[in-house]
Length: 545
Ligand code: NAD
Image (cartoon, rainbow, N blue to C red):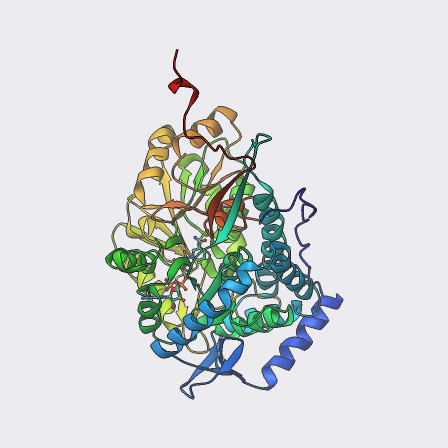
């Protein structure tokens, strides 16, 4: 039930540490990295608050160094998934019955621990396991996750406080936001440690119990998340982690279970469509209709007008397309540049790309590191090869792929000669930017092209100084992106500032870290209490004249 007046202050976003040479955070991070690399980690599943080991060990190697074994995880399947569901269902009622502030306190405590003793450990784990440089790890694993915890608690309090506007003296009307009846299945991607924790924590905060299946390529930092939740005092069984190499036995066991109450998913569009289909096929078997929340792929655009500030365009393209090797759902992956600006944009890209260093995240001078695994390497290098082979495209920068030491792919720029070239349409999910140069006079047609070329609608940016043009683009692209940027790169959404999510093939647009998302994890109960109920069924109109 609600409390009265919200008391939590609006959180500040967690400041991002700089890691400049000589800084204390750099020294602490380097020491933590060295420490973690000393011993390979053995990672169990986490079911009912217990470590579960199957003995079916799968090796975890650093994506940037084939020789660096980070650890092993215990892989499970359908049996462990059933055990995790049972543990979640056993923990659910007691957890849901706690006053909301008791649940919020667990996650507020997690945010304090993450700001303090866990910060460099989760950063180091994300650098080693997911091949992020220190800055990319910090903005994700530390800052964004702290923000998710704090903002979600703040929004939750407001949601619980929101009550029906009218209760006459004779009655009391109330709204109770109940956690869902059943369990929530969190299926998480490799690319953001913060998203993985949040997909579990947001439903749990709202009174749900969770079964979590992380991506096989994020398990190394997933273990730190488990330790963080434990240290914050999360009761046993509220979140349960199942690990697997093959997602299908885990996925199908959970997705077809009659107690499935919701799916909190982030990952690729085909996987979400599989989940949606599986739930649809089983719709008659559930005790309650499962909530399906999915944030998926993108083909995020930058549309440049002739009035744009060219240096700002160049920086947005370089950062937007190549930070974290383009493995962000929001990464700038297609750009439309007017002919009159192209020479200058191209020269700027050449200048910047010549200075970008690629290599291990352990060397802090590297802006670009490896991609996540062999599957991604093959997929991305396949797209680059198709561009090299096609008469409709030209690889103008980068294009080299080197698998000798780790999964390294050079920042690559493809010039598309037709606006619907393959890499203008499909998500590559790597350090590959495709540019189409359009005739200056065809601005309006280019906006239309941008809207229609890809099925996705996650992020996008317009660069222009002409106010009428900005408004025109904003209208023409109203459904083309869930996060729309004016004169800024399309990546780097901040919790509490630019709630994140996209529509069309990019997902259900439930805006992680925002009240819209939290509302998906509750089912409202309207309660009316009448203090002096009527005792005669007859209404006045029935009386004799
Ligand atoms: P993915 O779809 O390959 O995997 C995501 C998760 O789904 C993993 O845990 C995987 O093991 C699991 N999975 C795969 N098949 C399954 C099945 N049959 N049953 C149950 N689980 C299954 O995605 P990924 O490569 O980890 O992540 C990259 C993708 O995520 C990109 O498409 C990217 O755009 C998207 N993404 C979107 C957002 C967003 O907010 N929109 C954020 C981050 C990543």
